[in-house]
Length: 160
Image: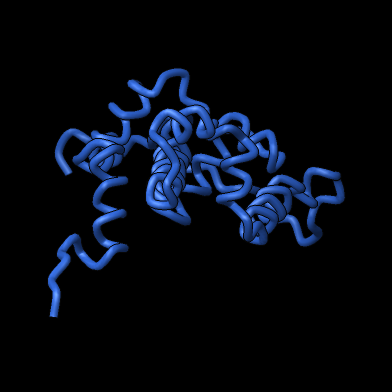
């Protein structure tokens, strides 16, 4: 061990010595010994796990991650950690998926693009159409048309 202080017979300076905690047979009795933080985190986790109506909360939160966090009583960062653990995505991504699924269903149910956009809180039908196109790869009007042709037998009117 060339060059180390131990090899030359010197001991390590005090700042380099490993410090071991003193042995104490009795645990400390201070309130910090109870460590409420992990319990609070565990309570938050179990509280969020018990929520069964996330899609309804998404609608109630106007598709906003910050509002959703307030609704369930956690910080936006705690909500983000929970979503990453549970669904593998950030809350805003999940909210967009939920919003687009609702838009898809509304269009298939016969809602107009303009009505769907307004109902889902978009400021303009054009913005809604742009987001929908990015998400599904086709426009909302094409989506609605596809739904109508699927429900009426695929669009063919073959006579026997």
